[in-house]
Amino acid sequence: MTLILAINAGSSSLKLSLYHRRPSLPSLHLILNASISNIQSSDSQFNLSIDSRHFTDSIEAKDHSSAFAYFIGTIDKHPSIDKISIRYACHRIVHGGTYTNPVRIDSQSYAHIEHLSDLAPLHNGAALSVIQACHVHLPNAVPMAFFDSTFHQTIPPHIYSYAINQDIAVERGLRKYGFHGLSYAYILRAISEYLNKPRETLNLIILHLGSGASACAVRRGVSLDTSMGLTPLAGLPGATRSGSVDPSLIFHYTNKAGRITHDPSLVGDIGVTEAEDILNRKSGWKAISGSSNFKDIVENATHQGPPENLGENLHNLAFHLFLDRILNYIGAYHLKLGARVDALVFAGGIGEQSPGLRQAIGDAVQCLQYQRIDSQRNRTVTFESSSVSDIGEGQADEGRILVCKTDEQFEMAQECALDENLW
Image 1: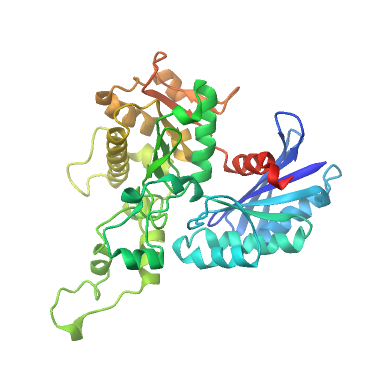
Image 2: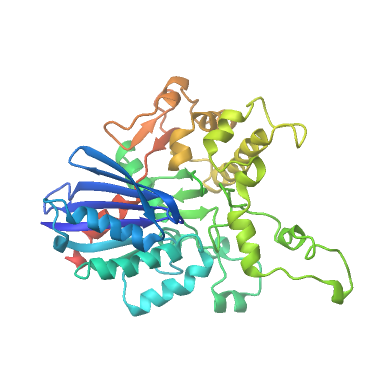
């Protein structure tokens, strides 16, 4: 039996899926799913689904390495799994720079990923920790890196470039890269199958909405533009991320650095690390409302429209601010796609589980001739026979509104299984 392990390291979580690669189609058979949440706390949660059974346990995972070690210790006890059979360990890496394909992890590629960690501080560091742990616990498995940024390498220069000195930009790699690419690749494949249309013909606007959120315009089956930029910080706000703000805001955010003066001796400094900490970890809808859980935002928002006064309802402010930023991208991408959009697709934890946000977006895009959202379908989204659910009324050729249950682990394993060069 040949096995593929797909590993998805988040900032405080670890998701793992183990697949059996078969010579016949479908090429992958899921053996187990596991997840560990609240890593770096004394109350980490371990969840395992295998053989139609589900197990949950409270563990102490001080870091991603110990979380991975616990997972390996658990599958070691399972009689039907031989970890020697794990041929490939596929690691999700958020930032891959200009890599256009998955790569085998060796000293050179590891160093490159490590170098890029500064541009994806919430994720690349965690992935590197798991790569090291995997080398210890699965020495026979070939480590492969799959990059979120790869999907967006088709973005043209006039879109990925910033209006700065281009010699410096090229020298330092300062450009838009885009992320959530594994999710977008899975969604594109799933929507192509669902609509029975070749990928290279599809125009899509995809919203990957979760604690980290982004939007992507797909033209003729490839990424044309995406909301995230040099780092995942750009674009839509998230649970603790600010999203795009005036670049000078951070200099005025702290009292000393923000003092307006023309006296050089009174100018305060704010370091890059401090700035990234504020914008990555101390902003977003948690900074506005006090909650990083978007479900709390939705439940406490009035949905009667945006607040007229700033302090009126901060949950309402967070909801409508997020909605406003999403609509900005939908409008821009609709124009870039020449008003010919096969489907508007919701994905990610919030995209899948927030009918209120989907309804608000659906109502707003009626002027662009998208399907009207069916309120009953929207409230009861299911993924029984497909990873795609249609929440629109009727069966239009264009302007469909769909929800996709994305699966980044499956996308990595599928790409690995289908790459003949690896077998």
